Image 1 (cartoon, protein in one colour):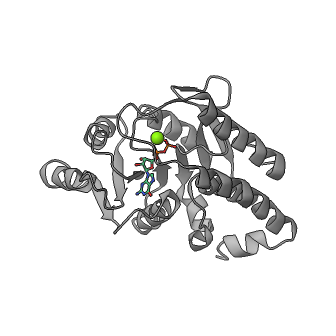
Image 2 (image 1 turned 120 degrees about the vertical axis):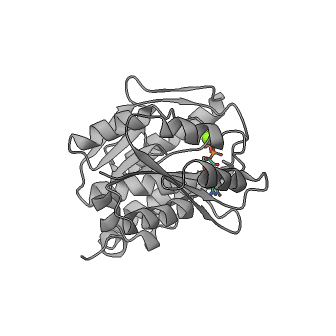
Image 3 (image 1 turned 180 degrees about the vertical axis):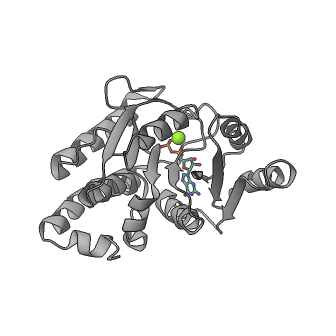
Length: 248
Ligand SMILES: Nc1nc2c(ncn2[C@@H]2O[C@H](COP(=O)(O)OP(=O)(O)O)[C@@H](O)[C@H]2O)c(=O)[nH]1
Ligand SMILES: [Mg+2]
């Protein structure tokens, strides 16, 4: 069984090497794909050195010319992984907010027969450490808002620590998913649900980054609110799945 962890990076030089070593020491055999957007701090060079010296078969990098956003980075990563027949593909941040040990719990749960497993901050047993109140309100408020508008049966709709069975991604028309940040995360779960896949949340503790800086900004949050409404509206008009799913 082939497992691929996709990690978008923008200025993660303090985190990336340690994270890669950590993941490769886990009991399961994960491969890693880094999508770097020409980080000015030289993140890509660190990864390329590691590919040369230690991990030529398991570690991969795609370099883009500039900061093009999280959503498009993941879509590129999904396509890359599907072409290479990975069975399960993971989304994960580079900054240790997501505990790499939880990758094992995600895959364990997926193997029980779930198509999409979400590492969830907002179910019993999950949580967030180190976020200021306003950050928490945006995130939790956004999650509740998305649930209220769409009825999506997921508590942490903006979660970014996710395991997908390849069938889920194959069924999606990835080219039509053009949202950023939070909006992208909500839509991935919404579409998987509407396509009839089995979803499951498991509790995780999300820790705010210790090193490096956040790339989140208000425009990404506002866009997500607007797009949730638009998504549900298009669905109710009967046009959503036609555009967003593959016919095959
Ligand atoms: N390739 C790429 N990675 C990004 C971009 N924006 C954020 N990231 C990465 O996405 C992950 C989450 O971003 P982060 O700044 O930690 O967001 P936060 O945790 O919500 O504050 C980190 O691994 C970032 O390096 C981007 O535009 N391009
Ligand atoms: Mg982060």
